[in-house]
Image (cartoon, rainbow, N blue to C red; front, side, top):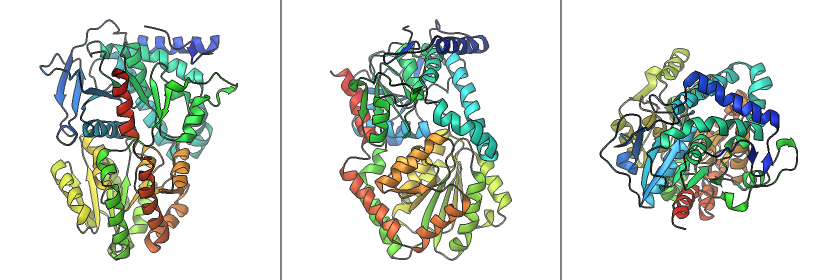
Length: 488
């Protein structure tokens, strides 16, 4: 296993940084063990939620060996972790594109295995990140002094990547019996790093967000980028070692692709936008989609928006979808704080057939009132938003992975400084608002969508223009790059 922590793209890490990286790995070894010599068996099973629509199979490690063999010709692994919902959503986009292009998508979540050191290390870091996200919304001081600087500058430094590379050595064992010639797209850097440490031959590292950070580097992979601004920043490793001018990434290590979007959302994009414009013209209720991510943060902001919308919903001017993911307690807290909410809502709870049927019917059908969605299964919790997006008019979201989706977007306050660049990019591409950093500005934007036509119609038309330049083709291109590595 080659050491990838001492020199990153030809840029040496200081002795202090190297020592810190080694110390980080030893800490996790001591706490969670070292299973690098384990011979984990692999089982392939149909994904309960995504196999039927997208042909997705799960790769399960440490559960014994299964009877289903890998498709060595057309198989493509989507390596991911659950950290919030964002990386799962990008993974679904990759699986959707792979399926549409005739490949067999395999889902490999490094945070899902039962006994591995890999999962324990990732789980511990995921718990810390989720806790930080929630605290940042409750404490302005914590957010200003710690969380924003960490997400904006801390993760940006090469020394952070150095530590991650050492930690990823503890994650490689899960690939022991995965064929090394099957291409893999990592939708978080840790699966990409772990795959490289394990000797996987064809690795694509699909970088999220629009703020270049060394956190996302996996040297030895092909890095895909969603924006041109981000491409430039990664190419020169901008600001990743204080004010030093660094050796740039080799051009073959970095490819601009455009946004990572599901095939199902791209193929009908024009018709969906035309329906949105027609509903507005005909005075139909404007459909707002709220999605609350895995950290469960921002519920107070969502509550303020819901209170503001209730009179408009009662008057038939607005309709509301609320997806609380797999956090039922969030819905219960919203109902406890907004007394009339529960009585005026239709719930779609833990019944995937009902949710899928509603989403399909709503594309051309009438929608009124409030519709709440909760699913215990993580795939259903995430994919629910994707299904509802086609029949929605405006998506209310923080500017993270959903900032890149082809639907008019109202951006709520970010969680972490790196996210603000998602809103900036979307506003410049014409398919989203500026980031609304407080409740009054959020409600102002809600009213603009409700009471005016021009802004909303411009976004819908611009989304159609963006499609003609391939802006939403990033998932297709990432899949083609991954499979192309094998076929060189």
